[in-house]
Image (cartoon, rainbow, N blue to C red):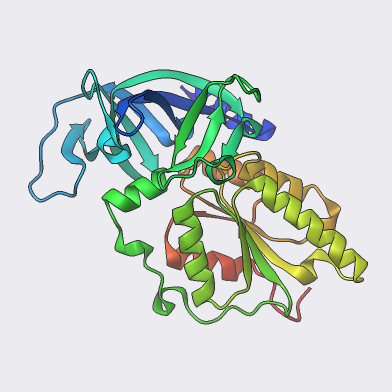
Length: 320
């Protein structure tokens, strides 16, 4: 097991990841059975559907709870959430870890695990296939027109829909006073989840911090390079224009590990703080975050923790 974890962690040094592929049944709109995917790092285990204990008064799409080796875990009907009808029933349970919480999703069948380069993954917005529950589209057989496609689900949006949390509310009482940034500097953020971008935007507005939010690591890297060129032409440095970078880990085209590594290995960005803000929790991921040189790691989404980390890593005006 440890060898498998190490091997998968090593993939992040090459902008690669593994996607668990599964089916949810016939799509209510198109009448087809499509492939869906979740990053393997979010999956704790895959088990045959156990007996579920219904709970009175639970949210829509909640099937109940299971007792898995002493831990009581909520189970959600993923086909119903996405709008599919299983043909053979809910046969498999995916136990997932998300932002230090554990929950399970019932699915019809598990197909495979695909090893992909993030360049094979397109933002759902860019591909024209945007949906509230889909962050991106994975091309499973390379970057060809004939490639099979899988929809990468936005676990953040799904959980926010079926189990809203008061912890996600952003208020001045939670995040504190206005941030003190160097005049003209912004916080550059990257996240492929619509829900995450919305929460980040709310927090930065409450903190009165100028910002730009992009939808992929590649877009953030391109923007950072453009800012560096513009700053140089004005006789300034990147640090005059960008106070820090806030990045997700799972993103199409370029992941947050690669973005962070690119920034930390480029002399132009020496001293630029990078904070990773991710739902990929667990010691293996957090250790790897430190190994690529990030200045901080925050599990999504806790407004107080994010504000505290931003204040800790931000250079103060007047200091080098």
